[in-house]
Image: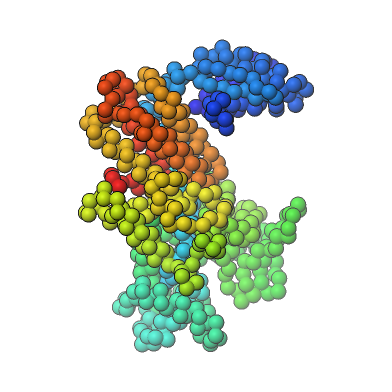
Length: 580
């Protein structure tokens, strides 16, 4: 809708002798005065050296001649306030009703999103939540806009943490065949490791390495031997990977987070020699205190950007090494137009170094973006922790929210016993995800379980509750099942007009969310739609409406609102329920 209106206003400015670019229309921030506004007269005035009000008056005069415009008023000092006709709204609504894309603009891009960032052999903790939630939603938003999107978890599976786990396993089970020099992969790996064992072993090994230099040295040696292809360690590593990935998939799926590929740092190892040759051949590598580095500082940097370390003085790889090698692999396998890294904003310097090095070396043609995010905090304003001050496991956090949601749903009395567990899980995930995504990703926020589970206010619970309200209406009107493509011929009330206008702004909401790489714009759009419908729900009847033409129109509106709310929630990774 905004695109069409902007074209109309741009044409009016052109007829007045001004540039079309000043005709951008926005939603009015004073809905009591008008539906839309244009501030282009101020821009045109600077170029034409005229008063903005004079330009606005001329453009508004022409704009009023357009049959889609109900009113166009120039307001001092140079705004143009606009209202559109119901006929124009209805025309666009009928187009929207038949649009499989819900008015969402379609693009043709290939995007790879690196999000999740889990480490194998370690449980997911609360710090992994935001990367998973934000990355999943951005993936779904981009797909809704027609992009080909690949989501990659990018596992930490090849570093010292693996060596630490292996060293501790060797201490506990020295007789395992995989620790013998004579072991071959063809011998088969007969031992098993459970996820509970791994979750206990890693912190134990990590703590031991801080006080036992011999143990830490053994872990480093085992890491190096693993990366060099020692078969016994590879066999053990594969078992650790199998158990870890199964657990990760289970935990992520509870949050409706799904990855297309499960690549890790180990998959980049094959590209490291090529990376080193490329950097060396281009004369980009230099030695610094025994390490190999690439200078990435640029003229104009406000703060110095230090060289990126490619190889440490002991010739081992860094995160930067595997990140650069990973880019080579991604270019070769996926050839994306863009790669988005959904990673904590505190890693911004690292990504600045990696991106600059990649561009300098010509490793990839894709646009590279670090989409940082803030922290989820507790009521004390500090990063969320357990009651005893420890780092909370993600599975424990999700379980606690599900339990709280279950108690609230049981109290409502509207959900059958058979459906309570499933409903509680969906309500809990809605509370967690909307509570997070409702904030701009760069902002820190406080997780408030009572507020996020509330069925009123700007919460995920409220949104899925609104869907159940519409479900209850449509159950009472059997003919609603045939209204997949409603037709609208009249606007019966102000609130219905507001709902139509909001439905028609869906494409703009997606465009903004995509441009800003920020799902909170989808949250805002969904909440506003739910709020408008709630006003309609309280003031008007559908199933009890005696005017059959009006009843038919309102059934169609309910069908469309429900369909779009389900779509909006889906791109946030939230599932709806039948009743609650």
